[in-house]
Length: 131
Length: 126
Image 1: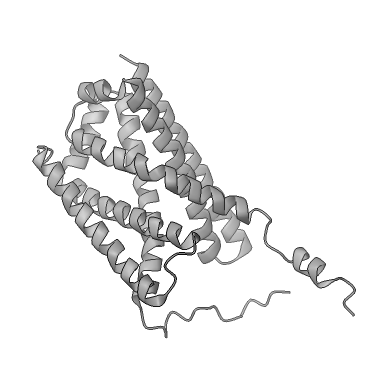
Image 2 (image 1 turned 90 degrees about the vertical axis):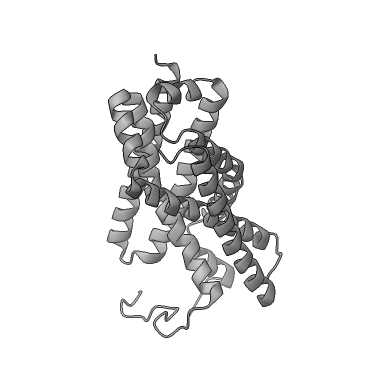
């Protein structure tokens, strides 16, 4: 009974991106990215079970410039998804649904993610992990 | 002529009946992941560049091994629930949708089990 040629909604081609919609899709993008990141978590743990050589290989990949770049990305994705997840939990309690509040909490989540990512990076390099 | 009541009609065409359970599981795992992820970030910073002996010494205490297994189980369950929603929303066509869902769910289950086995092996191994 479903016709296959029905138009899909929303018509994202004609919608002007807004902070609400951009942050909403970013929650899904970071979620999917973090799911892909579980591949690296699995590699890291399984390499440790395999032995010193495999573990060293995993650690040196994660310690390479590309590995660091990737980890920075996952760090930001984690903190964004965490912050926006808390925002979703507040909505589940019926809090903060007015548009000005939604914009404000959105900006707060972005600031939260950026600041925590920076703190984590500073802590990581200060801990001597930059080697 | 429509013989069924509006309620019966709505029920017949309703969702898959599992929506509430999915919704709750997603929230419960999300809350559990807040402290677990913070613990993981601290741990990952401490373990940057570590060799296997250091990593084993870190993972061997029961508390760390337990938290790692908890993180893995809750994380993969949360990812499984989230990926399901994303796939259901964006993959069109029943056959493609079911195929992608099965592949992703199998893959996440294999990854989760691999992580748990690896943690146990490292924690009890020499």
